[in-house]
Image (cartoon, rainbow, N blue to C red):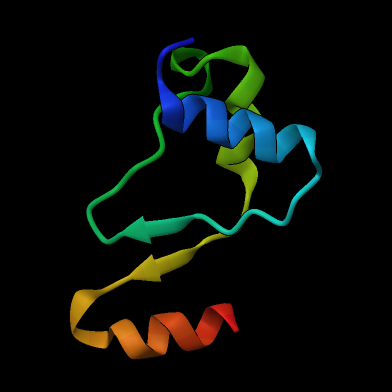
Length: 63
């Protein structure tokens, strides 16, 4: 796979790392069938909404 984001996500999933998706306010997860099978589980993770005007509060949620 030449897509480095795909490789990074799959490596994190395979390593059982903590994954916290940072989700832009306009982002929507694609349907699972549209993602490569080896990274579909990431759509079930809880994430943090990113709102630029409140970026400090978003970062605080991660800590």
